[in-house]
Image 1 (cartoon, helix red, strand yellow):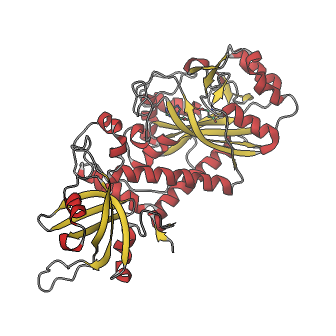
Image 2: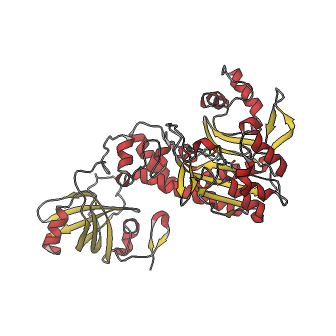
Image 3: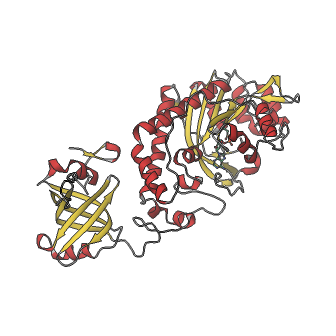
Length: 473
Ligand code: AMO
């Protein structure tokens, strides 16, 4: 017999439990009189003398265990009654209906609730006291203390819900790309040369030679496509030795990348918006329970509740040249060829608050692998590229573009950007023997999660963030 786990999925019983707590809570009526073994964290321990109420919590919910000294081994009873909050406890007992609370005359009866009348059990691990971060009570500690104690912070319902949601979002993204014919790949994270510019690489010693941590799967996803895999995606870590200390930058982040042959920038923008649409639709259909938990916390803090509004398609496309005009007309200082900084994005977001693409950047602003479009010039005559960004409000979510597939132009791009083609032969060799036009993008997973969960900082949606000041836990 399998048991009902998180999200109603089947879990096999294990050595430590025959049922989840949520299962006894929801299906208690059919279990009355049956013996179950359940396990969880001690959320509260109440009661004196010969009785004790132990509120247990696992990933599926809460259940009260009722302990009576007469019904069990005395030492076990004493140990459990004296146990600290968050200790892990396993109990075996008989499922019973809880005595219903008294209701005033004329009031409807509340739904039946169930508990376990304990006959035996054990403390699996006693929690030390005091807890550095409150779990069930709302202790006001800063983000740094929470991150130092992420193992406990994660036990808080809304934090736990965020990370369950994160896992689901990645799965919805994967599911969508698979339906569009993309294949999951893995690129090396130990690399020999930069793809996103040489200044923000983490160097490492690789036996007798120098190597770096990968900034992006960029060059490898292209090589996979050139090799005939046609449509690939990867979800993996990217490392950037940037000094940024902001709410949206980390030194290690998970990048969700795709690359597809016989596609241009517009084609992969369409893939992106369809994938985001799918993720939002799936969250709206399946994960309202997680959103409710997050909202319960947000409301307790005086923050506005989040709603999952599935964005309509297509997302607006605001070519770089038009974006510059919007910034200028909003009073921003910017010239053609400048980067569109966050304060400029605020002016664009005033008009386009949701998801919007910014296609056709100047070639000078984009990396060497972006397609150099000789046929199109910007308003000042500068060369345009097939590179784009996707923003949500003021924040960049994605960069992408059509790639340069012509060997000679690619080599010239490298030279134009003061890079040495000799250092990139492992990559450019892939273009010598025929290369399909191709395109792709890289999406910052934590940034997308920020949008979905209303988090004000990427660190909220990254389990163990790495930033300028943090390499532990
Ligand atoms: P880019 O460098 O713009 O493009 O990165 C792609 C996306 O990754 C996220 N991101 C970050 N998230 C957190 N902390 C950081 N330090 C950080 N840096 C980037 C952003 C960004 O939009 N190879 C290209 C992608 C491509 O063209 O396919 C690339 O890496 O959300």
